[in-house]
Length: 359
Image 1: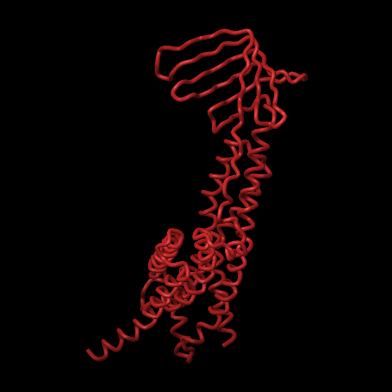
Image 2 (image 1 turned 180 degrees about the horizontal axis):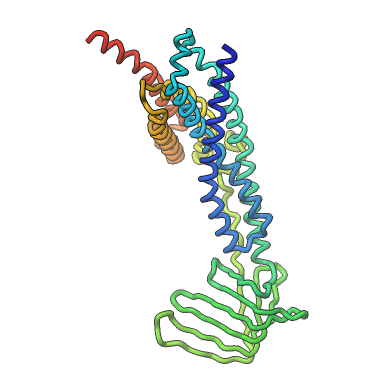
């Protein structure tokens, strides 16, 4: 029996790791694109970009692991049923309870890992990511203008470019574009001096020997102004600390909080590990196949169940935050509904067989 347990466990773990890796790669593709876009807009350092991608991986793991485990069990047992290995094991006296032994052990281990991720590691990763973004934004906006590189301020409303920089800090062949409502202002100057205030919030550009073009794109009415010297102040918007996002709040603070938003986040963190163990135990009867049925026949049903489960949990989280569902009930009703579905799935073959026998 131990050899059978190891064999089943090996098949499930390999399928689970493969599915989780694929899902995580797909999810990270969008995350990496978002991080790179934000880094390009705000001039993040390269080291900050790599760190943010790693922290994003940690934040996405609690979401990916339950669905990966569900599909891993369904795919592994689907192959065993399709190749009649489970049928042979049952013919040798292996009952359904025995099959649950290795799966239950794996589910408990993964649930413990998810509990640590959701309750401790993921909030710390979120807090570190927010702090790193703020620091990267601050260092990017407060750094001097570099020759040969476009520099944007205020979300792209002001763009500055200098072709060369002299040893004394003078910028040469300077281009500035400023957008104000519908009007656009483009300034070209032969030389410029760049100064930053003591607090880093004000960049002052003193332009020499240049021209300024003002007008509305698509219109033929433009104004051209030639100048010998012009001062262009560029104020950097203050970094709003705002309310600390609830994803980064430590679990101990959520437990002590009476805010509905914090309590909803606490129930969500508790729900993710429970989702893993309930989905895993449901996957075993769900993966049972009929003779000559494809090994992938139940994958769509597993995806549908996870979709309903996760969306109900997400809706329940919003309902707790808005006071629609009492906080003491939390998301437990979602888990009870899935357990009832699991009992129905396990009892359905026996009930169907009895009805056919009576008929």
